[in-house]
Image 1 (cartoon, rainbow, N blue to C red):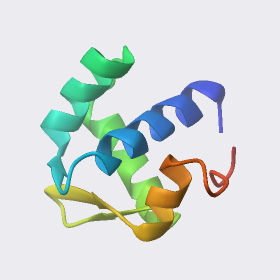
Image 2: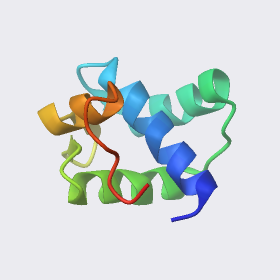
Image 3: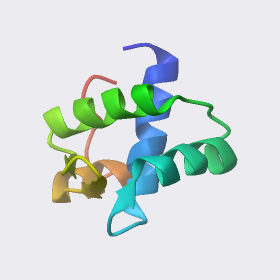
Image 4: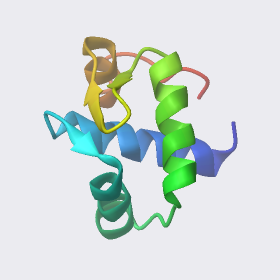
Length: 83
């Protein structure tokens, strides 16, 4: 995992932690405005898939939600996988 991938994924996880359920378009806007990271929806989908695989996020195809483990990682109570 590159440094930019890790930063983008951590930023996505932090954003998802503050919303009960958030869509991809809103995630892209938050990444851009709040974190200063420009990313395509395809790239965000790929990152969400990775976060799901790691057990940090649930995604139903439209909305992403953080898991308990994801909340621990976002709050720095647990180590971020692969970083």
